[in-house]
Image (spheres, rainbow, N blue to C red):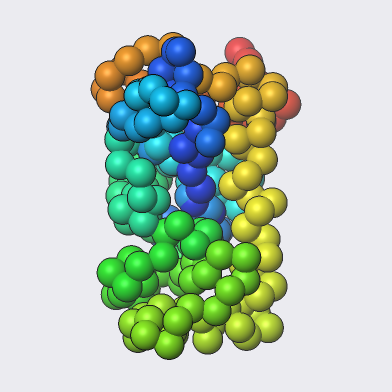
Length: 204
């Protein structure tokens, strides 16, 4: 990836029986282990699945699974993974409001990564009590360039989850345990990438 990555997540993957569905780069990237939660009167094991998607090639360039529900805790680990795998850091990162935090915005700025992260759901403006970094991000998103850039988010990271569920038919993890589920998620993401790249690969 050379420009930007888009980070996204899907908290709807669980173990079977499945839980309720609930670089130096120049492109943009858009970017869950297992947690027991109560649903329908029962506790179920569910996972927070994260991906980072190259904005130009529409392939997954980072993936991890965790047992921590808040997405904000996963923004920098996924960016670190992308940089480690590709040898370059993304120049831009797009992410939804779940990844908002003062710490994340500060770290993006300190690492010279051009971040576009929603600060309020459904276009809502953050409270005046929000920290300096959140307010700066809001001003950035309110610019013409900020609106145009962030608008691309849904078209980058959301489609892979659709491919995983509709094309591959993968809606729940078959394995249990964080390590095994993480390996299964990597396999699923690899399968998606192979489907996307199939027409460009020359097999010897």
